[in-house]
Image (cartoon, rainbow, N blue to C red):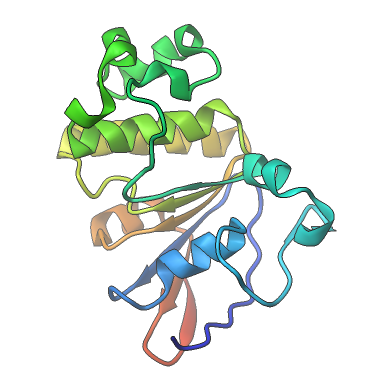
Length: 189
């Protein structure tokens, strides 16, 4: 495994696009920032080092959403603090209230992706780390997810978005971090 060194800063309301070939380190970078994988170096949130914040609290403030989200209960609703309060956002994502009673294993990959995003947004993080959040979605569902993310950014959410979708990267604009086989390139768009 090669060593990946990155120096970056992201402000509230900003989206940093992370691009690169499969295996270039996008997921590894996001998981390191979320403190899910061992990493050296310094990660700071609002001037406070990662080591000074308890891991569960850090992961509420900086929330990672995997391309293949994990589930620990058989049905959907127990994964959320208050399922009924999420009904407006469910509709915006093309989901319905009855999804709460559904068995997770019976859901499509796209439904699981949207529900995992909803789960992350429900805890109101300051930073959202998204790993291919729309890879299993059709165009309409992708637009719905992007609209919610844009709205949250307008309210101060910082997003690091790993994507292979060039059109999506352009829609979010801003700075792009490109992970290559031997280098990291930062570009402004």
